Length: 291
Image 1 (cartoon, rainbow, N blue to C red):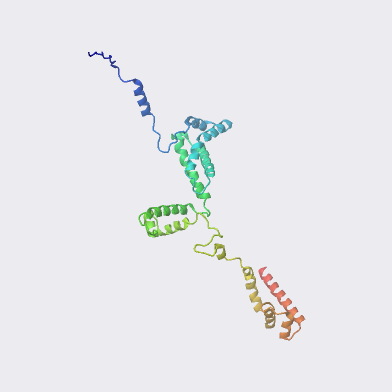
Image 2: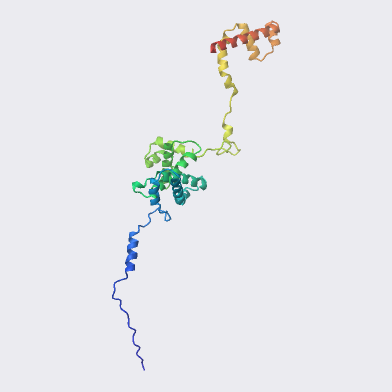
């Protein structure tokens, strides 16, 4: 025998959809979505910057300024992290970024209507790039040459995939980067100027440890006597022939006074007096001309 089970009454909702759902949708639509590059934990400091701009110099303003720098410091550290592994310690980059943040806080003008972050990010990034430009090069290279170096490097990377098996020519780089071949040559030379080669480094292709320092010349002590030799020449030519012969035999052939006296048939004492008198006369004449 079948038993009929009565169905439960179903409550039918006759009111519109809940108001809460519509409110959530409206709130989500009104809330701006974070843009690419925005920091989600950025502090809401717009009112503090307006107050900072109106405060006169003093302890209250200094305290507010310090607090704003501390609130935005995590953002500066994140920007510094983007430049790690480029030859500079991360702690140094963070200090540079903090300096850029301080400059941004001091220079920001809320009256212009832009958010602080949109002003601070390029300011901090520019400070970090300036640090690389001015402090990480071994040689001081003008900014124009550094820009040429970067353009040449990017053009070489772009051409590397299209012409495998060989290096791009200067003409190809110039056409790709919209540069002249002279500018390309300057940029190529700057590519090797970022770091200096140690004088103790072994030369490429050398198997015997031949270093660059061994190819450099040393100071020549004879250079110090060039001026003296040139000043003496006309004075020597003005001496009598016998005195010229004696000085030549003594100072150019390194002969002793006794040997000179024997060759010339005069006494050694006479040779000594002639040498002393000739040297004194030449010295006095040169000093008189100099005076």
